[in-house]
Image 1 (spheres, rainbow, N blue to C red):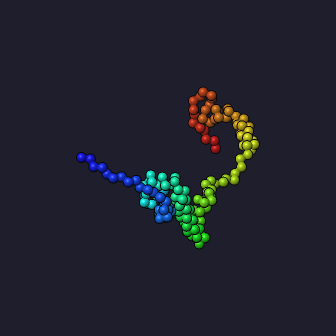
Image 2: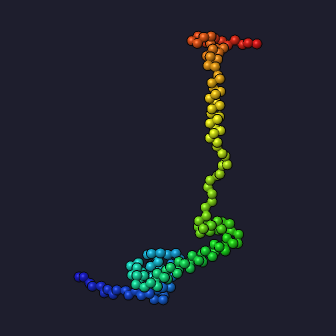
Image 3: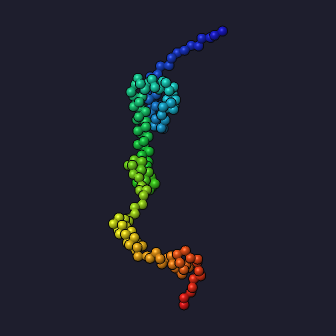
Length: 153
């Protein structure tokens, strides 16, 4: 036997108490489904009421803005009191400041000087006599056998 369950749709209105719960949830950083459930509504109900009443979205935005302002005040108070880490975090996240990651090297390379040095090496190579290496103390002729070096005193 099937029993009929009575169904009565919930009427969701943006009452002052509901707006305050939405504000408080948004101030704590909740969003989406978590915000809706924390405010005592189903996510579908929250979506419906936020479309019907612009005060719902305003309450959520106001909650987030007030929380951001309070936390920003805490950070700025700490930074102004001498907390260098907080000051650095404010600079990085609020002002887009980034510490330099590279080391500057102040060394200039002259292409003309490098070419002159290379040219000088080529000129010096031309002054070496190839026969000096072939007929050194170790050989007597081009294809000759190696002989012991004679020590000249």
